[in-house]
Image (tube, rainbow, N blue to C red; front, side, top):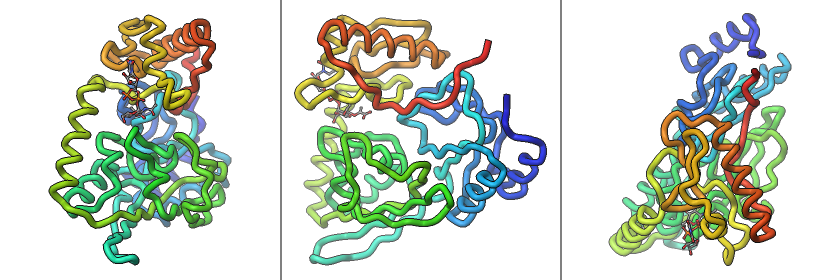
Length: 313
Ligand code: EPU
C-alpha cells in the first residue's frame, strides 16, 4: 500500500508540479523494463529543490530512495514505498575549465548527465580518460555511486571530486583521493545522493582517441547482448574468474524462467524477453548462485542493485 497520504500528494504537487508522478511503474524507468510502482516518482529540477524534497520527506517520515537512470537496477514486482528521486532529466549542467598541468581539462558534471553524453563530449574535444565508459548507459551520479567501469577502467580513475547531499540535505564535497573506492562500490555516507562529479581528463589527439573508441565499442557490441537487461548481473569474483565464464561452465546459458533468460551470448546477462517479472529474474539469480556454488564453491555477489518489495498475494 502506498505510504503517500493525500496531504503528502498535495505537498509534492506544490513542490514539483508535473515532475512528480504517483504509483508510477518502475518498469518505465529501468533498462530491464521490469519493476512495480513507486508510490511517488520525483524528477528534481535543481539542487535547491532536491534539498527541499529531502528535508520535507524527512519531516513527514516518508522514506526516499535516489536512483540513477535505472540501468543497473532490478525493482521487485511490489514496487518501492515512499519517494523515488531521479536527478536524470533536469540536472545535467556541465562546466569545463582548463587546468594545471597544461593539457589537463576539468569537467564538472551534474549527476543527471548521461554518461554516454559525457563520453561524447570528451571524444568530440579530444579529452582522454572516458573511453572505458563507452557503452555504459548510466548517468554521472549513478556511475560514480557504483564506481561503474569496464575492463578499460572505472570511475575512481577519472573522478577528482564528488559533491553529495547527505541525509539532512547538507552539501558535502569529497576529494576522490579520500574515498576508499572498491570494485563497483564506495563507502558513501548512508542515504547520500551524489549531485555532481568533477573529472580530470587529458587533452590528446582527437583522431587517435576516436579510433580507439570505435574499436572499444565494436568489441563490446560483439560480446554483449542487446535485449533488455541491467548489464552484468553479478560482480566478477576476481579478474581471473569472471562470473560469465563460471555461469557458462555451469551449463546455464539459455536457461529460462518465465520470460527471463540467461543470455546465450554472455552468461552474466539476465535478459527480459518481454514481460519478465522481477520474480522470474530473482528465480534465475538463485539458480545461478546455487549452481555456481555447488559446482565451483564460489559465492557470486550481485552487481545489480535490487530495490523494493515483493508483490503481495
Ligand atoms: N566469458 C565466458 N562466457 C560468457 C561470458 C564471458 O567464458 O558467457 C569469458 C570471456 O570469454 C572472457 C571473460 O569471461 O574471457 C571476461 O568476459 P568479458 O570480456 O565479456 O568481460 P566481463 O568481465 O564479463 C566486464 C564488466 C562489463 C564490461 C566488460 C567489458 C563486470 C562484472 N563486468 O565484463 O561491465 O562491459 O568487462 O569491459 O565487471 C556491467 O558492469 O554491467 C558490465 C557489463
